[in-house]
Image 1 (cartoon, rainbow, N blue to C red):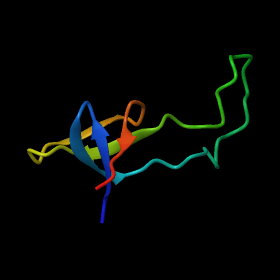
Image 2: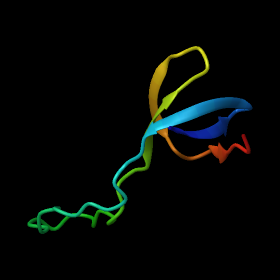
Image 3: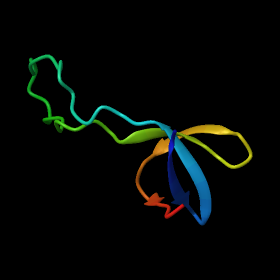
Image 4: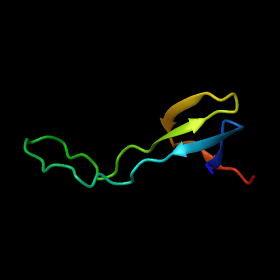
Length: 65
């Protein structure tokens, strides 16, 4: 069963969560800004109308349902 969250007041289901760390990242070879160890927290959600959307996890709150 998918986790349920509130997004802008509507109930959505989180279907796929991201990996929290990049485990197989290659070593840095060029003098560039360091990339954080954590990947962006994008999630696949299903809206009440059935639409599937990939969006950032930011702004979502756990629903008490």
